[in-house]
Length: 261
Length: 322
Image 1 (cartoon, helix red, strand yellow):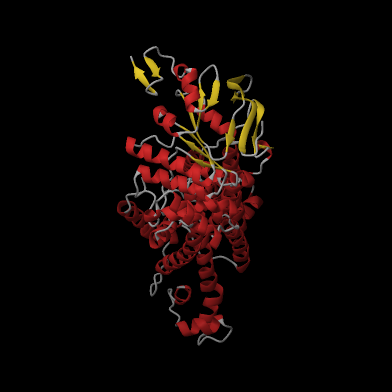
Image 2 (image 1 turned 120 degrees about the vertical axis):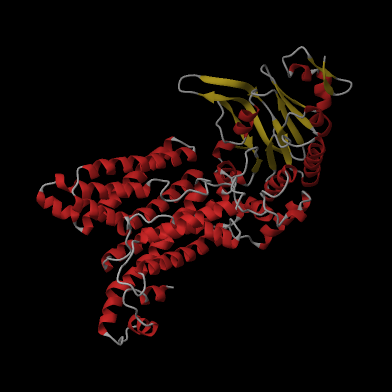
C-alpha cells in the first residue's frame, strides 16, 4: 500500500465531529493516497464535508477512527514545527490588515526554518526567489498585499506555500472569486508546479469541468461514499452522476461536463 | 529629549549643569542638583519606562487582536487597575482606621492597582482559554471597562470630596513622585515585559497572516498567545499602578512607528516603537511641566490632547485599514 512516492495516506479513516455525547460521522473507511507529482482535486457538494476532510488530513482536527500517515508516520505524532516542514496550506480566509509587501508575505513561509527572531539566511532568500519565479510574480515583490488583484494574491499565497518547501501543499478552494481566465491560469500553474517540483498538490474546488481536464486524480465526496481515481476512470464509472442529488443535473460523459436538463 | 526633560520645568536648569550633576560633578547651584537627582531624573526615567512599556504593549495587542484600534485599555487592564485604586481610595471610609492609613499610603495604592490589573489579566486569560475567538476577548475587555466605570461612579456617590480629589489626581496620571525604590520595581517589570515581547517578534510576524496560517507555519499558537497577553499585562499593569492610567500612548505610538517606516515587520516595529514611545512620553512630560511656569499639568491630559487628534488624523489619512 505505502509506495515509495506516497507522501500522505489515510487508513480506514473516519471523519466527523464529536459533540459531548454523540459522534457525527461524515465519512468513514477512507483509504486515500497522495503521491508526489500529482495534482489532486477534491470535489463534492456544499456542506458535504470537504473542509472536515482537509482539516483532518492536515492534523487540525483529530479523526473519529483510523489514522492519517504523513511520510509513513502518524500525523498525530508530529510536532507543529515538523508538520510545518512537511505540509503547507493556502486558505480561503481573508488576510488581516497589515502593511506586508509581497516579498515579506512570501518570506513568512520560511518561518519553520528561521531562527528565533525570524532572520532570513541567504538560503532562505534563494527559496523565496525560487517561489516568486515559479509563480511568475517577481514583478509584484515590492507591492503591498492589499494593492494587488485577487488572482495575483492567490498566486502570492501559493508562492508563500512553495517557500515553505513542503512535499505536500493543500489549497482550500483556490479558484473562488476568480474569473474563467484566472481560474484556468491558476489550475495550469498548479499543474506545472506538480510536474516541475514533484510536489503533491491537493485542492478542493467547485470548478468540476476544469478539474476533470487538468487534474491527475480526483476525490469525489458524496453522502454515501468517497472515491479516488483518475478523472477518465471516474467518468467511465459514472461517478459524477452521484455528485448532486438533483435529477435536472446530468453529467455528459462524452463532453465531460454537467448539463442542466 | 531625555536631557531636555530634566532641564526644563518650573525652574529651568542649563544643560551643562544637568550634564555635570548626572555625571557626578557639582552643579552651579546645590538646589539644582537636589532637584535633578530627587525629582527630574526619576521623572525622566519613569517617562522612558512608561513610554516604551505602554507603546510596546499596544503594538502586541494590535497584532494579536488584528485590530488597529487595540491597546492596553481595550483589554481592560488599566480599568482593572483603576478599579483596585478606586476601591482603596474611595472605599477607605468603610475600613477601620488603622487599615485606612495603610490603604491610603502610596504602597496601598500600588498594591491595589497591581491586584486589580492582575485580576483582570487572570479573567482575560480564563476567557481566552474558553473562547478561541480573539474578538470575543476584546469585547470582554470593553465590558470590564464599562463595569469599572459603573463601580467607580457608585463608589463616588458614597465618598467624600477629599477622597474623590485623590482618586481624580491618580486617574489623571503622574510620572513624578516615584521613589527610587518604586522606580526599580517598575524598571524590573517593564524590562521583563519588553524581553518577553522581543522574544515574540517572530510569532507576531506569523500572526500577520491570521491565526490559521500562523499555526500552519509551525507556531505554537496557544503558547505564543499566552506569552503575548502575559507581556502586555505586566507592562500595562505595572505602569498603571505606578503612574496612573495614561491614555493614547499604547494606541498612537505603534501607528506612528508603522506610518513612519511603512512596514508591518515587527523586527523594525519593535525597536522603532520603543524609541518613539520614549521620545513621545518625554515630550508630553516636558509640555506638562510647562517650562517657565509654576503650574504642572496632568500628563494624561497632555497625552490625550496630543494623542486623540493624531489617531483621528491617522484614520482619515490611511484608508486601507478596512
